[in-house]
Image (tube, rainbow, N blue to C red; front, side, top):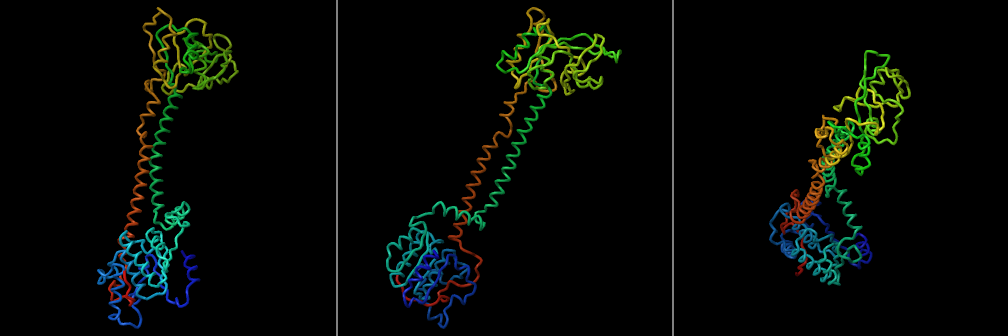
Amino acid sequence: MQAAWNARASQEPAGCSRTRWVWRNAPRSITWCSRCSPKGMDRRQTQPQALEAMRLFDLDYAADRRFSELSGGEAQRLMLARAVCSRPDMLLVDEPTAQLDTRTAHSVSHVLGNLANQGMIVLVATHDPDTRDACARNRSGLLCARGGRGRVGMGLRSIFSEAIRNIGSGTAHALALFLVVLLGGVLLGGYEAYTVVAMECESLTRVRAVADVDSVIGGTVDGSACDRLTRTTDGAITQAGAMRAGGEITALSTPNNALQSYEVTPGMLSLVASNGTTTDSIDMSGIWVPTEVARDFGLTIGSTLSTSHGEAMVAGIYSWPNDGRDTRFAYTFLVPRAASQGTYNECWVRQWPRSGAASNLLYSTLGVGEGSGQAGVTSLDKGFDSHYDPYATYMGRVTHWIPYLSILIGVVIGVLAVRVRRLEYAAALHSGSRSRRCCSASARRCSSGPDWEH
């Protein structure tokens, strides 16, 4: 716009010595009534001309109002009338219809065209298509400066530029919207993250406490069939093994303290020793002891313990905390045995997530007709719910609706932001500023001007 005005000024004809500017929202800069009155002229003499200028802009009904009582659109038209009263040779107008409704804006554009037809040079900066069309129809002296190479509307670059200006000036309320979105994201996202992490911790606690291990008791177990369960369930059962009670073993260093031993298959030893992880090989060359026994007897892997059954080499040490699981392996000796070496009393399986169908496969390891009718499947760690389903728990969590709520909140914030911005724009168009306390809109306070026709 400034470039267009500079170009027009460089071509100003001789005798064009009186120029008036009408800025958008220019009434805000008027602070004293004396600025509205011409010098050296009686207001009574200028009243008819002032009223006529106000009629040009449909303001004669507001001649007796205070300036502070006018709306933004009325104040904008008053400034146009005031500029016309000063008889300028050139009138520079910035967005003359920005604060006007469609009907009034069309009337103002028509008046500016008439002024140009009567010899005044009128230079207008506008985004209004009607005002632009008035420039296109008028060739005498009405010029319009507009961007976008003649296109109506705003290009992408202009949109970004306008957005940056709105953010910088605070009209877009970017900081408030950012804080609202940030607060909502922290509260909702944090609650969801807290819930999911708590569920993960619960699952990890169950796995570490072997709450995912089921066992069949009350019958005679085929050790080979028990160890093979990991190969016949397509990964549903990750570890399986059998065990039976062995004889008591007494360390020669503590002759009065005999410990119960248990004979276990390779699968059972892998289940116990791995602590929830799958191992490729287990050393079956010696006994395995829990960490408490190793500490009390000063044992390490590879060391030898003198017992009532002879020398026993320690092949491994495993952890068996007292967290609600079966305590029989907490302070004992585990003696490895081949799965095909006799029958066993129990078969254990580890599965995650737990499945009733996989647990029922434990019955397939029982021998027929040897008390198998009294056998039953039980959880190794009875401190946890045996019917725990991690997938169902995750899908049924109370925060599963948070993503949908976040989308809804985002839409609501967007709609409210647009609505508030539209209301602010409408207020700027129609309500005007109520803080202006000076300059009456009376025709008595406007300078004289020529008798221009609509």
